[in-house]
Image (cartoon, rainbow, N blue to C red):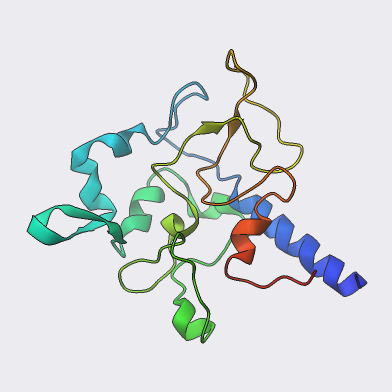
Length: 171
């Protein structure tokens, strides 16, 4: 692998690491709780999901304003170098194919929920990235690691599988 390819991968992984380390500004619960528990309340659904048939929120459709809910607790300036928000992949990347599990807003823009699953598990038995420390209180059946609500990650390659879902990385 060339030095340029290694630098590109290192930069990409460093930028991706910033993606998984947002700093909550308010409303965050302790590591023992699930900070997104308010998403379990039915009245929260319309904040992220558009209405579908019969006027009920459609889980497959994100509102273009869903980022406002995320940024109510996570300060935009604390997110570091992450993927740009408000990107229209079809306009910016031409024929880019976004996998079905990385859904876009109804208007085709990327938003926080493209890469993060607000309804996902807060803790997992699997690390989200290499060398990740477990939470302070380990479960009786072993250590638990924060997921950062990422749609894709892994203990060996961190967030690279998430980024590579849309971006081809040199090998």
